[in-house]
Image (tube, rainbow, N blue to C red):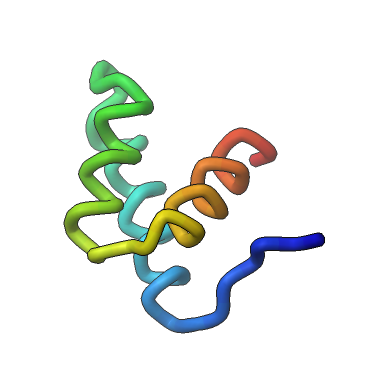
Length: 57
């Protein structure tokens, strides 16, 4: 079973997260993931999807 969410907010969140990873190379990955979750008001499923996306890419 896939937990892939739909919606433009997920695409924006992933883009923002990618930019943050580039701009803040010394910031821990978990801190960036927490920031994106709060900034985009992600549900737990959306957050889990993004975490898996980051790990796989």
